[in-house]
Figure 1 (cartoon, rainbow, N blue to C red):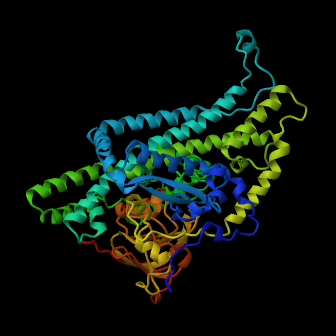
Figure 2 (figure 1 turned 90 degrees about the vertical axis):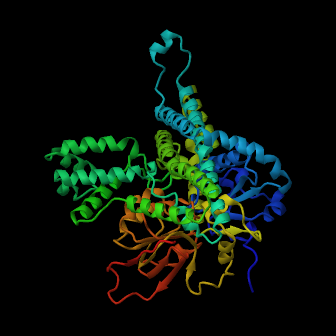
Figure 3 (figure 1 turned 120 degrees about the vertical axis):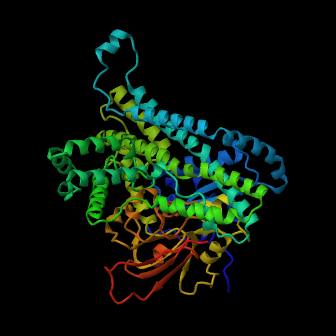
Length: 623
């Protein structure tokens, strides 16, 4: 009998050892007993695309700022006619979302205001986007200037002579508050253009569906592909450095890229090495402000802080260049295919319709790159600096005895950190013999929270909660997360169409057969072998350097405009997104057929040659 509903939040078992987990998060982030009837009426889906692992208490800041700011642009800035913001809750450590629809009777009244507001942006797109970059960069620069130094034994004599009348502790308190405000500021900026990028694409998408009722979603996406995106610049910098290393004959210097200091010293001492090092230093700022994760977690590793990661990618590119491979994205082929698809569909239209088609496609193509580019400026660059400053503060307080491990500040929420800081400056300021209270208060709490977080990680999140609507129409939910009516029915087990196979969203065209490599963590990326099929909960945009090795991608979550889908299209790779459970169903080493045009993934009997042989790849683009 078909299932009609996902479990209610209260139906889900709490993993052993995680009892009392609700207490580690702010009250407003967890489901409330007093609101149970109302919250159980809403459909919630798990956003494991952006938050694939359990939150430590401090890490909820990314989810809170991102989803709040997304909502403000829908509901308060742009007045999108049919979509307000998104309610969000943390349940058993994972983030769940419930889009808020606009009451049908209010839609018409919002339309003129919506058109006036987005019209201003679209008419001034280039100048306003340039101003956006200036605002964002100024925020990052100010964040970089913040410091969290140990308090001195005494106020300097010059402060006495100048009549400064402050002890310096106010700098610690102000800098912490300012760090949080600057992060919040750039998250507000983040969504200034993002929703507009989706709106422009959706407008073109809907127009194409209207005039070409049978057009595949992929064909529409192909009409805006093949663009220069700043999000690809870090990977392009590594490719440039690999080409330069080959040109200068420096290949043998990259035999042990994990030994960063020795590798860079060896290059510096080699013939032509100083030229390469100069180019490397040039690439680092800003393009190494790039994480192998997604920027939302304190444990994310950034290239700037872990240079073994970019050096390892460069070494791999050098090996491929020496083997005669091309390492560049197939941009020219993508543009050629784009122009072919545009021309074929445009030829069906009369003059008036063709002009409308050109205008809508042109606007979508202008706005489309921002959908990915903002990632570099906010999730990567801003959050890279943010987490570096958080670690600096955490380690200063660790040295003062506040917690057992250097990065344990992450087990406090941001308001608790504020209290702990005031405790620190108070204990220091009054000269209390035992010092601040924190070292006697926090270690036991942190150890308990550490065990709760570890216990929560033992269970995968439910993909959704409560009863889904009969039809999911909210455009962002479909486009970004791939939460469609069909996908929800598959999660409920009501879709029999694929038999033993896995079905998701047809996100990037082509058919490929090959061996699976299941990745649950970015630290596993080095395990990927040439031509394997990457299977993951979600891919990060920063995984670009491995996209030249894989032959296709399959993810658990994500729609046509998810990062995984966009990046795969720009690398010319087949992709199936939003499968719901591919990363837990498929095992590394299984032989797959991935059809990016139909959204089907099949587990097959492997060919005779066995693992280690190259995949058999056959790529077809949709008409």
